[in-house]
Length: 222
Image (tube, rainbow, N blue to C red; front, side, top):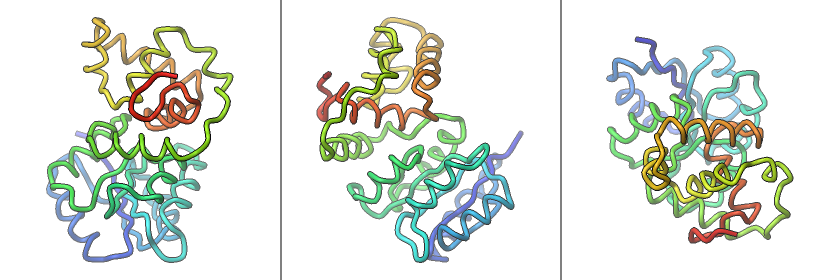
């Protein structure tokens, strides 16, 4: 079994120790590095080539947002899973825009932390929890609407429909049930959407859906 390689980034050593104990107890997860701020995180990532980075937001020297943005510019960047104390936080809004693949609260149960790492490592995005759905809607309601990106015009009607359902926080299985198609078909549509819009994952697709006005906070279709 290939282990999921994880780097922990948090300015509190006690927090890192707790996360390490939880993750190292799993046969398929290996903590390969730690960092106390964003600058150390970039060095640790370069040295260890992780699959997932658990990233705190508020840290000295370089915060998690700037670090996430710089990680996204790397060749073959790892997935970033933001850790925060607050469920609604301006910093988290910006981290999603910077390219994070999702977020968890620091008081998340151990099983959910482990599941979150696995989900993100598999290339999916952590959008299922209701708190994440609320977060996406909240941050999307703040900026002024921008013109619909030209890239959205390249999507088929079914792809736009799938994107809209993704933006509501639905999983591939839920979308498949709603559209009466197979989950493999939905995965193909999602892949085409990400390719056409030149996006890394579902979180970025959801951001585009809201910020373009395709979907409005509350689930209304634009």
